[in-house]
Length: 232
Ligand SMILES: C[S@@+](CC[C@H](N)C(=O)[O-])C[C@H]1O[C@@H](n2cnc3c(N)ncnc32)[C@H](O)[C@@H]1O
Image (tube, rainbow, N blue to C red; front, side, top):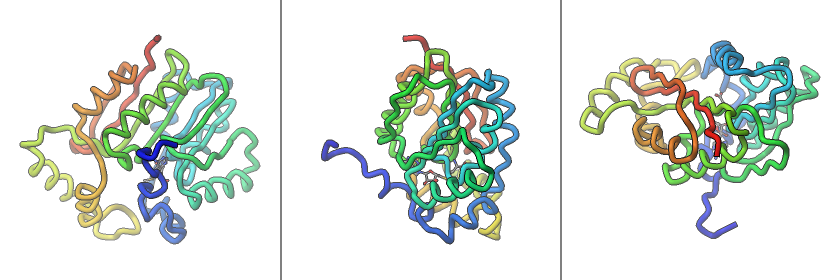
């Protein structure tokens, strides 16, 4: 590995490496994968599909789509997260989910190009230079016409509007950190993590070979993108 390559483990977010935090993670997130599963199905997810979930966390989406497709590969850089997914797979006796300890920038795949890449709330761990490389690597995993569904904290406003939007977003924060994100946690995210602007992400997606077919935002701070990998 080149000496300038990013250490993804060091950028994984300390909380994601913490067993106590991970044990309470799903309660905090309250993530219901139904909408994503429906979206993936509407884009052609079917029994012979393969999906790679990058930054899979505790595997909520991976496990939800496993009964609907041929193979799911859940990738995460945190060994605590991957251990949680492996426990689930054993408990549910799922045979079509593979768990890989790796990151956006280190995952190596040598099978047939996949049909779907999914990533939720993880890409912001990478600075923009690396996001673009990660997106390029995602394009490399997908077959032409394959689908990327990307959800993350993405800021859909101009820099001059940042203060108003960030304050409005923080006003919707919860006070109990076990069931959501507090204003201080959101402030810490803005200060210390790498959520980008939508107009930068749009360009990165274009430059790495994706056509955005749908994009929507919640509170101008949370983006859901569905993209199709262009034919080369
Ligand atoms: C906020 S959690 C989201 C987990 C899951 N996708 C979800 O929606 O519940 C972020 C996840 O990204 C993982 N992560 C952080 N940096 C990563 C990287 N460079 N490559 C892959 N996963 C990474 C963390 O370990 C963590 O599991």
